[in-house]
Length: 102
Image (cartoon, helix red, strand yellow):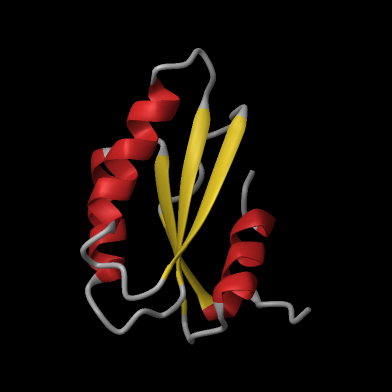
C-alpha cells in the first residue's frame, strides 16, 4: 500500500472533534451524486443518538465534485472533505480517508 503524504492533500475544514462513527466515501466524477449522498447519509445517521463525521475524499476528480464537497462541508458541520492532488484510485483514497478520521 502506498502512503499519501499530507502535501498531496487539501483538507476542508478540520475535524470538528471526537465522534462515535466515521463514514469515509471516495469521490470521483461524482458531481451529480455528492448532494444526494450527503443528504441521505445525514438523514440516516442524524436520526440516531450518536455523533458522526462524513468524510468525502475527492480522488482528484476532473469534474465539479470538489466544489460540491466544499459546499456540503460549509452547510453541514458533520461533513468534511479531503481532495487529493492526483488520482490514486478508490482503495488508496478510502485508506487516506480512514487514516484522516480523528
